[in-house]
Length: 372
Image (cartoon, rainbow, N blue to C red; front, side):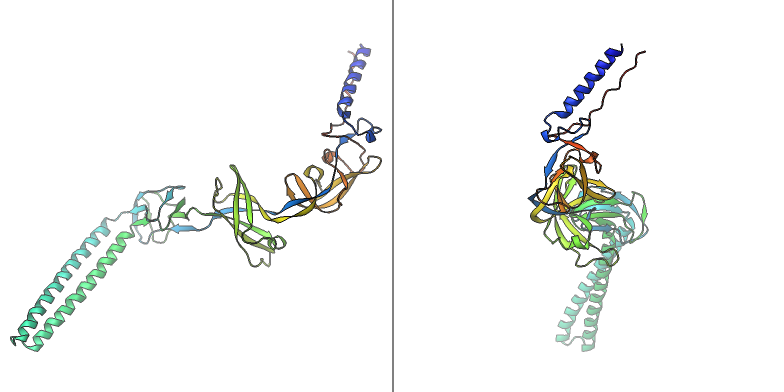
């Protein structure tokens, strides 16, 4: 029984070693088979897209707060809900306007009466002028007729102004959309008694959204109006364009604000906080694969190997990350070989085996079973 268990354990070890040694570099064949297998890659210069990555909220370009201008009226009809698109002039809600209708009718009646008075005064004046020409009435009587016409016209103008005021109050009983847009918030319910100046609805004008972000002063200097910004969404990348950049920075935070228009926001909604990638240009940079860079203790490192295949940790300064490549700003030179696959498992001073392609994990011997 002991002999059979030892044979099985030896077979398992042999299979694991063969799996880890496939395609190994002959230079690393003298390393123990149980050491970590890694691949190497050389740092190289290549053109990359210069970007600034920063997070910020999606917001309405212009959000209008809508309310009514009369107090003490009850909402009798609410015609919109959140997310609904409206056109300029659409009636969004209606207030109880029965008393306002009565006032308007009275004002119209008073205006009609005043206009009739003007017509009568003008007729009297016309007849008086004819009689005065034939010397049937005196000049003073003619002056009185002229004054009566003037008074009638003044009463008509007053009645017309009262009618216009009553019509305006009646119009205030309907809240109409001041522009095309999307209803973003509703703060009123049917039957509610409202007060003048209270916010009842919010409207995103033209449905237009923008993305805003706070940038450190060194990054703000690299961004200009017209630059492209890429925002991730559930439907893919949404492209925007920088509309404006703060001309200065806050003295306390040392940051400035940029604003990007989103002509086609897709599934992005106001209030969504997303990470944007701002394209600032193209240039050559020293890069290594992202798998080669490890983050430890708040710093970025890569691993190099000496002639005895011992790993040495090298601290680097990184820049842009584009298409799986990381820009190395400081710490490496073009042509330097660094560990790619397996870098995340290494420690300073570890001995490794160099292989081609995807490395295998260190082989582990199967535990021997004891006879019962």
